Amino acid sequence: MRDTIRFVRNGKIEEIQNVDPTHTLLNYLRYDLGDTGSKEGCAEGDCGACTIMLGELVEGEMIYSAVNACIQFLPMIDGKEVVTVENISKSPADPHPVQTAMASANATQCGFCTPGFVMSLVAEWHGENRADKAGINDVLAGNLCRCTGYGTIIDAAQDAANDKAPDLINAREENTKSLLAKLATDEMLSLHFGARRYYAPTTESELEALLAEYPNATLLAGATDVGLWVTKQHRELEVVIYLGRIESLQEIGSSDDSITIGAGVTYSDAHYFLEEFDSDLGELIRRIASTQIRNSGTIGGNIANGSPIGDMPPALIALGATLVLGSSDGERALPLEAFFIEYGKQDRKPGEYVKRIIIPTKVTGQEFRTYKISKRFDQDISAVCAAFNVIIDDGEVVNARICFGGMAGTPLRASAAEDCLRGQPWTAEIVQDAMGEMLNDYTPMSDMRASEDYRMQVAQNLLMKFFVETTAPDAPTRIVGEGGIAHA
Ligand SMILES: Cc1cc2nc3c(=O)[nH]c(=O)nc-3n(C[C@H](O)[C@H](O)[C@H](O)COP(=O)(O)OP(=O)(O)OC[C@H]3O[C@@H](n4cnc5c(N)ncnc54)[C@H](O)[C@@H]3O)c2cc1C
Ligand code: FES
Ligand code: FES
Image 1 (cartoon, rainbow, N blue to C red):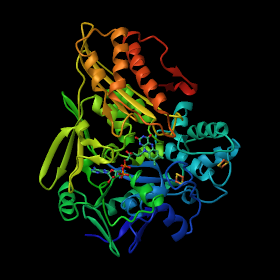
Image 2: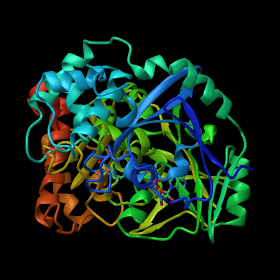
Image 3: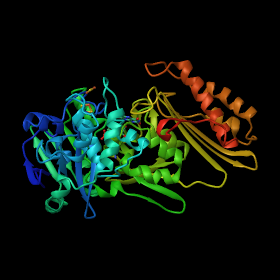
Image 4: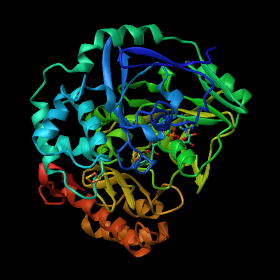
């Protein structure tokens, strides 16, 4: 077992010992190293002022992704390259192509937001390098400026995308790769800091042994929820087990009858795969949070946190997904909907972890749609999230699965509405009846996101929208906005 965090920065291996494992990466950079280029705006993953880039060696290639340093715990960078705004150019006289483009387009704004914008764009420059407006809007959705504007930044992003001369990161890439290869290890990271423990197992059997010893440990995946427990709620986490180094939890695959997603698969990694399976599912993932959060947050974390407004559970429940839990006693499978017992209570026993989710493949006559309703289009939590899945044969509803988030204390199926539809013709009249039945399914609450009445009305109307989309595909049910983005 190792007690040293090792990572690569600026072409060198760095080592850290004796550190609080819930110390954030941002605080380490700013307060321990004095590298204050990355800023703290919100400390909750919302504003992007702290955006940095993580590099990983995957099958011999460097993969870079933007993340929010404010909610990453320091040991999570173990085995990776950390690139901050301080190390993307050799000197102020020789800036990175993204910085040159920002300056030329008059896109530099205040010192608070600009480093984060630059780092999001540098990560994109090293990744997909999209030059289209819709793509750039996606890249920047997690970078907030409340005062100036995005027009010139988008111009700069387009200019930079067309200026792909090698940068400093490319120049040190071979060295970075060899350093990361040296850091690659199956040895578990085990940190002790006072009473606090942090473990990063590399196999599920190591994880199960740890959970047998610490059944109530905090499991840590992308930290997009857990990070906030520390930065916002100031919670003291005694034993933390990090799942991000267990490769088997990050597998995603398909067979003739199902697709399987490991609990540790991030939204970004799941996106293209699930988009192929269903374009609405792809669009739902694109609407979750921001690029930075999607690069860290996992599908398993979105289920395990038990939130009534998590975006994945309604779609997965409507699709009839199965959840597989693991522990030292073996595996246990249950319908995903059965996992959510009541608000704040899930069917996960001490010592268990979420292993994978299995989605049955589609059958003939199946129609599926999912819609997210939120106050802001980007980077916002749902007021209501709907998912509809019906199988229609010869104009008749053979089966219906409808699930909503935001309508109850858990993601919940609309059983009365489903019963009303099953065995009936797929007509506007029957759909109207089912909309009425939804009053028996839900008693939504009013909160800052939406009132009870709004939630009920929008939920009912979404069922009608689904009906229209399945029966009159050319009806203008989705507004296509600037950049070609369809608004649900
Ligand atoms: C700015 C911001 C925007 C967000 N926007 C959205 C949004 O639009 N839609 C949405 O649904 N959510 C959103 N979230 C919430 C969050 O990103 C998701 O819930 C995410 O999927 C959590 O995954 P994670 O890997 O980061 O989990 P973590 O934070 O690491 O863990 C979350 C919870 O799950 C547990 N856990 C994690 N993995 C496992 C496992 N394999 N087995 C058992 N328990 C496990 C943890 O112990 C913890 O209780 C947002 C969060 C932030 C900070
Ligand atoms: S400080 Fe706002 S996202 Fe990190
Ligand atoms: S937050 Fe920097 S200019 Fe608006």
